[in-house]
Length: 505
Image (cartoon, rainbow, N blue to C red; front, side, top):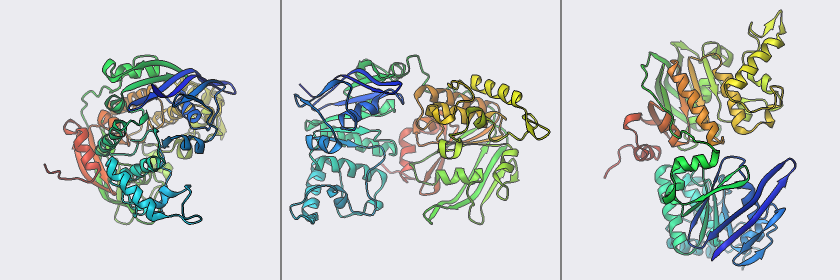
């Protein structure tokens, strides 16, 4: 018998049907994966389960009885827990204090932290979580914080656990450890809902898989009955190339040279420490690393958005660009796809066409006697929208109304228009659907074939492995190794990402 059944769930918003007649269930002791592109309806369905939304039609059956869940606290009380992609922890508190937040205590109004700590140790031993209740959360690694989130749910006696992109910031080895913990939980009879866009993880962990597309169920399957390619086709509605073709190219001279780069981070500590690398024309150098190891600071310094510490050097086609402003660097052939598209890459209130000419609106192509040539702008922008397959009602549509994938296409179309000599692509497919990611990968390979030197920064190891000619691995602000793509494996790159430079047997 299923511990959870969601029958005929329909949820409408103005102009949008987020879920339409969705059936989904979870049995005790299994991992049931919910798979789908952005906007497919996964989040809406889980928000209904967690009491944040109420369905317009359909019903939720929990432990064999109809249930009306009206708040997260009611869901938690019923035995439903959720581990969010972005951790919900207070860094300055200890593990025990974080676990105890919001709970009643036998020593009210005080919290009995000794009792909480003792119970944490019991749960930790039972599930192999290796969590020390006395440690401040800010001292923990990302993987350890993930365990604290799971501990919070187990402490509240969750029988069903929803895991929303739980591996997004973990190394491959940490993912393996997490999967062991999750399997131990299902062996004890708990049910797990796994939400992930990483198809190899879905195939490795799932017992059953339900795929959503455009708010409807497009398929039910199991890992033994399907493949990554078939899952991608179910998500998108067409065949998708998961690994881009990377034909051999003859590389040229080094077009980007970074020497002894050191950068102070936002917290006053050194975020980048004596980093050096080259990127040749016709080459993609991927930077792999867990989030927060200096990748953002490297990209922003090259782009001119941060000032490095003395002794650093950045050369673009042999020219020192550190004294230059951002526009001067662009004039030398630098293009930049930033990590946060709506903060640094596009102006949401501007139209699609305004964002497409944001960096070159003052060129002779678009101005005449100091005035805009609107006919030329419209021709140029319409051509880019068509060439880069941007889905927008018109080029005058506000950019903020587009989907994440289409906003990213606008930014990439703008940055690649001038055939740059050096391209910094930071998290180019973060948060975009699998079809848009396929297209973006094709564009990056096309630039490589034209002789562009591309620095690819991504926390998606599949993306780095699939696109890069060489891979530089960063750990705590330093490059610990640069590996030729032909010699790179998920395992050895994962160890390097964790700081294991010379693994022993």
